[in-house]
Image (cartoon, rainbow, N blue to C red; front, side, top):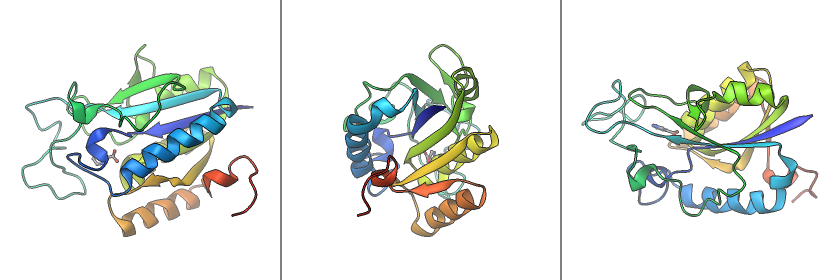
Length: 199
Ligand code: VGL
């Protein structure tokens, strides 16, 4: 049974000091790196996504001067800028597929993006026979939620590693996790993901 790790949008603009910083983003980046150094070998495929928007346009209404922080946002993750790079606290050496999404459009799910070889995440998972996917990253209530929902829709069993995600809003993040659980995702702490002792 093939297993994938999906690392959603651990980018400078979504971590402390970024244009759309998520509280706890740096801690998630470091914790994902520690998790990878212990467990990268458990995964057949490790996909990392980056939001990758176009400069000087609103990217389909995704950027706004007066954003509502629900469906419009301050300018963030512009292609080729430091804000769009992976947070340096995220170790990316074990990543097998790098996905970019959101060129000119809002794209919350990594399933809307493509790899450097122009493949979709759905195609990568199908090709490798992935039946289980663990999801981590930023932000719980937006891109993690959308990516995990699409993974479920693709037919894989999803586990959200709850200590390796952080969200924009506390309530909306709780709601997102509840919706994911209702849709069939397992909510698991990373320390329990591979049979660790209860903490
Ligand atoms: C995200 C808001 C806007 C995310 C992306 O990565 O969760 N959130 N664009």
